[in-house]
Amino acid sequence: MTASRRSLALLALLAVLWVLLVPGRRGFFDVGVYYGAVQHWVGGGDLYDYLRPGTVYGFTYPPFAAMLMTPLAPLSWHTAIAVSIVLNVVAGGLVIRWLVGCLGRPWLLVALLCVFLAPVRDTVSFGQVNLVLLALVWWDLRRGPRAGVGIGIATAVKLTPGLFVLYLALARQWRAFLIAVSTVAGAILLAAAIAPSASRTFWTEALWNTGRVGDLSYVSNQSLRGVLARADLPGWSWALLVLAVCALWMVRAGRAARAGDHTTGFALTGVATCLVSPVTWVHHLVWLLPALYLAWRSGRARILVIAAYVLLCTSAVWLWSDGGRSLAAVLGSNLYVWIALALLAFLPITPHNPAPLLEQHQPQEKDLVAG
Image (tube, rainbow, N blue to C red; front, side, top):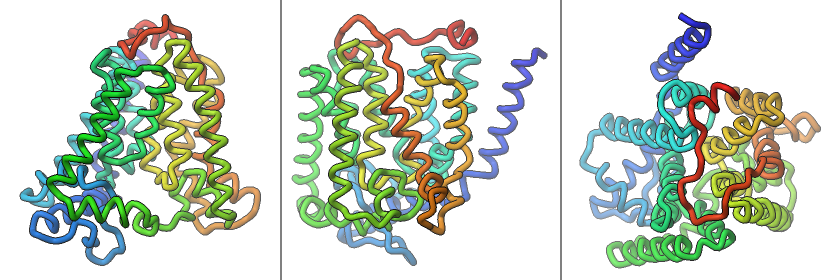
């Protein structure tokens, strides 16, 4: 057995141990909220009145998301968990396949390395939906003139992927933009027709109640709003930071679009989404994975990319979970925010022939082995 095969075997063994030991550590809390909420709703209750027993957490997504989750209602709890795990594994595998561009050893290596990342661990062990939404968005990058549906569905489920709709406009992909907007509008109208009460509650009350999603200063909130909340700075300063980050995103993503590098444009948009959202829990940071992979593939500053990967594996921010205003606390409790800002500012852009959202060159196995 060659050294590379031994390394892959060791990684595979570690991944198996991870699968056996880690996923239950968050108790599949979020899928428990989805499961309980749709059961409550199907049983005649108000979707946004439901709270998971013993907690203050309820359903926070639009009614369209609840409609998609209603098949969970008749299932047993353990079957619902199994469905969540399968969806996340399949979605993550597809995203890696689309990024790497080939199956076999390179795909396996990247997949095994992703398994150890804290955002992936938490997505699986909470039973979150972010990997599925990531797959929907990146599916659109491969759909050519039919692009827009995946982004539209993802936005209708969780709103924050709406920045990808704006990317389509920034990139002058007008057909895809109109399809995405139409998909979002259609999903909202469908939900309003089927569940008018829940729709009214969400758009007039639940959407604006940030207390429903938890404490903004909690160390797991790795967004710009979380940085300011932990520093106890006024809310208006968040608006200024969001404007600055959006301006940087428009410059960099616009440059990628003009270069025909929609892969990097999408990756930059995922990073910006994490930064500008008021709440970006650690499990939301799966949106950084494409940018992290592209940064590695570029061959530049690989030591820094490795350092970012290691930090994202270690859950290091929790070392400062008790707060503090020291320089170490400010730097340490916001580590993932600094990584996201670095990716947004410095992720390399690769010129392509300007084209619609067609499948672009993906590295073949020899590219990965050589790099």
